[in-house]
Image (cartoon, rainbow, N blue to C red; front, side, top):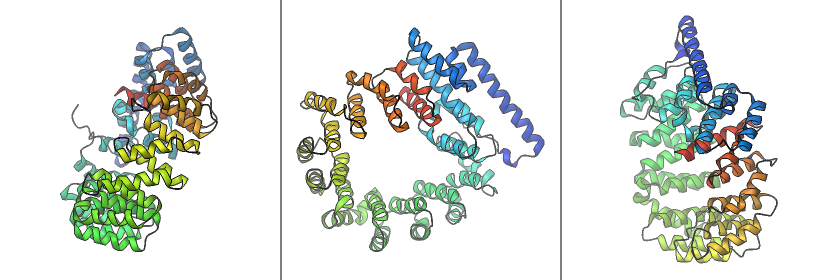
Length: 443
């Protein structure tokens, strides 16, 4: 299919709106009828939003053995589609954001949802824009002067092309933070040096934390000597959270090659804690002349830092470097069980360590709390099917996050029929997240 444009119903006259609404309602009905003709009763229950029937049908399907990978993928499309269609208000916006990672199989649902004039409709349009299903210039033309901040944000996100530079900069100062965030995201794509003065101002003065972060990253993406030095000026008066974003900005290619590397070297050698670790990791990843120094700082933090520093360094460390591998091996014997889980989750990927790390992770998987949950996730990621019974039990955990992780682990093991339980979870957030995971794994 070529580029598709979704009509702006919030600008349509009432009669046209009613016609469009009936078309959308008719489309939904056709989807339901078509699905009923070609799918089983679990899919029909999901499309109709009948949770109790869905749960019963899932149990029947598991008992009868009729579920396979394809049928679970179809059920996941039905569940995700229903959750997107049925949610209202702010929960609908959050629900849409949660399906960004699996948008492609949901294009018809998103296109249908974007035809509504509410904030969730605008969120659906943003997703379609980012997936190249809406033409940016047309989005700017239709929504640039909308009275709705959520729809102006669609135009702002589409304003990355040179003809829309002045409009993009105007949006940096929009009273609605959604519009500013969208425009600053467009600036990340545009990398227009002409944006730099206003981006620096937004990075310093915007009242929204995320907008300041996006502005700082956009400065890093533009790069050049002036940008690097202006970020250094910002560093002297910034708190630790802002400094962490500045480290990210200096690590961006256009800034790294224009003095950012020297700034990162200074931070790695003179700062402490997570800022030094993040700078060291950027140096290591660059592959340049300071890669070895970055690895040494990471290794020292993984072996000798505070608990939070060890965890952060282990998250970033690679088993492909000798110094880092030695530090990970040392951490695998740490007194802190969570640190041990993180270390063995890295080591289990190596043939020489696999058996010993699996054995240790199986012991850790029996622990209660987050250590056990993460150990089970690491075993599933390593393809250890022995953890499947524990993951099935975890599907009944009180924590929604733990239930999501259990379903993801079962997916990694290819146990699609067992994943169906989570598609009928009591929480719509769990149902949507797991459905999106199923669809993402399918692609």
